[in-house]
Image (cartoon, rainbow, N blue to C red; front, side, top):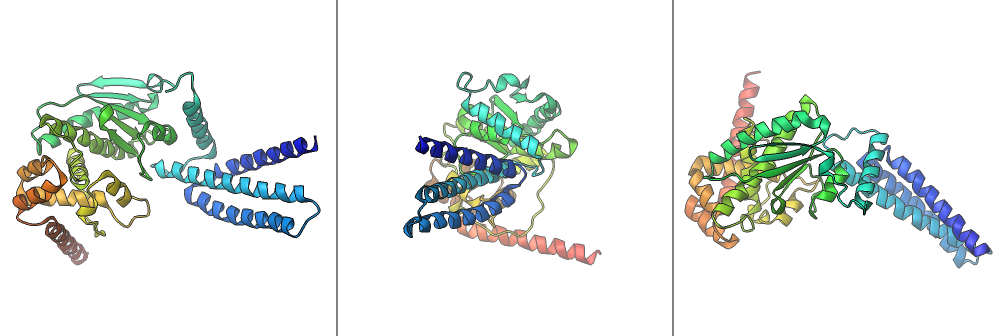
Length: 372
């Protein structure tokens, strides 16, 4: 009986610790949560060693020492899990400002969504508004109706920008799903290793998943650019399908750079160049390579790098070079086709295009300085 009481008392303390930690983490952002976890793990280690040494030296209350060690392990594991979950949550947010109540609601909603076995999908789409026009079928929360209208209009601008580069005959339908809860969006996406992800196109589903910021005018450009990039992927793959191939053998930097180029053209803007640390294009060939280069603390900017590479290719060699590079058939053939189309190796091109962009950047900076 004493053993059962001890176990129940232990479990009660564990639940209390987890509840306290959860409440605390609701009020912390991603990095503060990680810092707290480091401190708590250090405290738990000291607490564990205190119990362990008590057993070694022969403490008369061995049950208390074992309980102390168990609590230290439980608190340490809970702290680590909660801090990583909290960090992941904030890495998905476009706006890091969120209060504890909304955050708790997100966790609760995501938990119910994941473990609602009677309605496995929680019929998520049926809980949303739907608007269909031409090639876009969009699902959105009622408060995001302004986004739905703008994204449908934006799709036409993207199609126009695509046809300026690619000879696309038919535009297949795409489904667009907007989310407010990053945890539910993460569950709906296929497995990936992106640390921060606000949008993804899933070719097998012909679906674009977008994390929608609060429906305000100031966020409109952000979500239009995000949608344009993902919709460009849909249209690039449609172009490849028409030619009897797919994107499996297209170097990732080429597809991502082209999607980025098209998205900027569709919103009538160009990215402002600023010097960045270059990733060799040979290291940006696969999805895995791309995920690795896009780590949150990475010094690289593969999207910007790939955009300017596409811009340079189109400027120097025309869209015919892009069309041929997209349908080379396999990654090894790509290098031969690239050299044939440009007269340069890929390694030489990447060093030259970056030098050209840096030269233009320095000239523009000098003009700004002289005009002050």
